[in-house]
Image (cartoon, rainbow over all chains, first blue to last red; front, side, top):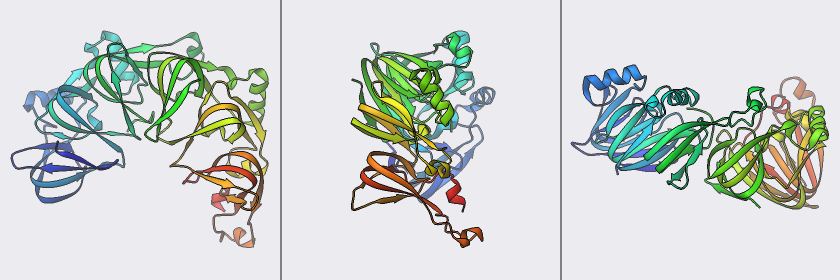
Length: 216
Length: 212
C-alpha cells in the first residue's frame, strides 16, 4: 500500500518509478526526492470517451498525475483523511472527496438512477451527490476526505445499515443502496425528527460514515 | 438499558435492545437493525416542560430513538464526552446535549448573569437521574474538579457543563480600561465553589465577554 497515515489529516505516499498516483490538484503539501506533478486535463484515466463521460456527469474534479521516485505528503483543507484498501472490489465515492489514489485503480462513473430508478435519482439530489458518483476498482489504496472522523460500519446480509445521506462518505463491496423514507404527516408540517431520509445499504461490504452532517 | 460507547472521539455508538434514548434532532448518522425516530413535541416532559423551555429560551429539539441494534450519533464533527449519572444532576447548555438515556429527566434551571454573558440566556438545561448522557464540545473537553479549598474560575465561552454540589457566581473584571477599549478580553468569568466537576472546552464561543 503506497499510503501511510502521518496523522488524521495528512498522508505520505511513496512514489516508485513506473508507478502512477492520481491526486486532487493542489493537494500536495510537501515532497522529497525526484517527483513530478502533471495536471491531468482528462481528469483521470480512460481516455477521451471517459473524459466526456465525467464532464457530463459533473464528476470532473481536477486531478494531477504524480510520478517519479520519492515521497509526497498530501492533505487538503484540514479535512480528516481515511485510507481505504481495495482488494478487487469497487469503491463508490463522490469525486470531490477523492484526495489521492493508486494509478492502477480503474476509474469510472456510475449513474445513481441505475439502482432504484426514479428513487435513485431522488437519492442523489437528497444526499447532495448529484446524479452520478465515481467508482474505483481494482487492487490498491484510496485516500478519501471527510469532515470530522470516519467510522467504518460493516454491512452483512443479515444486517443492512441505514445512513444519514449528509453523513455518507463512501461504500465498497457488493452493496445495493436505496433511499428509504420515513416521511409521515409530521414531517410535512415541520414536526419531523429530522431523520426523514435515509440511505439503506444492503448486501456485503462496508460503508464509511463521517462524524458530521456537513458536506466538504 | 442502552449502552453508550465512543467510536473514535467524535462518533457515539448506542447499542439498544428494545429500549430508547433521547437525542438531538437530526444527529443520527447511521444505524443497523430496526430503529424508529419520533420527534418529542416541544422537547418532551409534557406541556409544562414545553412552556418552561419556551419561556426560558432553553429550546431543545429532541427525538426519541427506539429499537433493536446500533445507532450512531454525531454532531458537526464536535468531540463527544460521556457522563455517567447516578442520581445527581448535570447542568448543561441545551446546545451541547447530544444524547441521554430515555430514563433521565431533563429540566430547566436559572443560572443568573452567567448565561447572559455566554449568549445563552439566563437559563440552562438540567439532566437528572441514573444513566448515561453524551455532551458535545468544540475540541476535547477537560474535566476540572472543584473542592472546598480549590474554587475554579472559568471563561463563560469555554464552559460547557457541570455536575455536583456547586455554587456558581459571576465575576466581572470590568475596569475603566475596558471602556477605553483596552480590555484584556477576559472581562467576565464564572466562579465555581463547592464540590463537583466542571467540563471546559478548548475553544471559546462568541460571547459578549470575549469582545470587551
